[in-house]
Length: 263
Image (cartoon, rainbow, N blue to C red):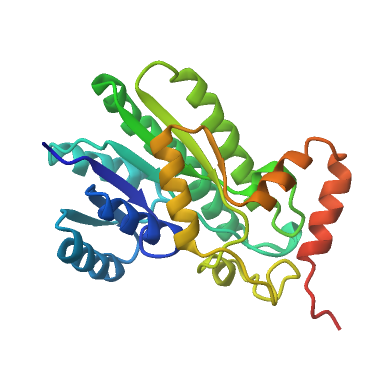
């Protein structure tokens, strides 16, 4: 029986890295995508040796949509079918929007929103033609409210959640499912990349590991769940946002994220 193949973006670290390991453990061949080829090649050697699967590494900066198209064309030229699409690549930035660097902000929107949407549009028709396939879009509990000091990041994740839920509805009965994975704060390289080590939300707090989130997300995807919020407390907090005034929620997030070491 032919093995299934998963394409995972942002696979060089964090949740994407752990998802690659989970899927390899379950006998799924992999196409790993990230900017760093060196890290991908190390992971390829580890997974092929341990699990006997096939791993293809394709370096790409997906904040450039032209590279999304190039990635898809490469897969097509290799006559490969993608059975699982994991849109994990993304990053955040910490600070006041008016003081943000536009180049970084624009790159965030392109990666978190545009590339995720474009890759879904590219690979979804093939899944529909084969009448099977699963898409996992990594959103966040940030999707459920506005996020002062991370305004654009929270907004991008709100898009990912809304987009995922909408197309999940469109795909009912087709054999293809879409899952929005919404982890809360997680032990990963995200906080360092976003410059959040000193924020009140992260400083001195222990959070679930990327492995915990990856295993949960994989199970939710395989079950065809549309919404997957990791952690009981995160579920409670996410659904409580429906009851609280949005202005109050924004103030609460601001208090959490304010830098704890102000003089």
